[in-house]
Image (cartoon, rainbow, N blue to C red):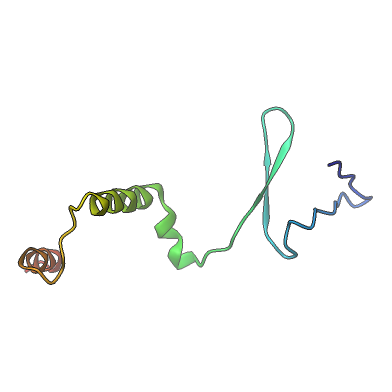
Length: 87
């Protein structure tokens, strides 16, 4: 698909892009650009998208899949909660 900018350097995106959808324009090494649809996140939720947090979540999910989870209403779970609370 060829897009031709108008006099104000604007282009019309295909219908697959939603109106009002933020788009990041990524310049690539070969001189081309990639349009990446983006979403807005509240600033107070950005911590959840840090790579260390994502890695921790993935580790937790893998441990859960492997049956390594501990029910919080069990003796081990209650001990774990006390440890987290510093008691």
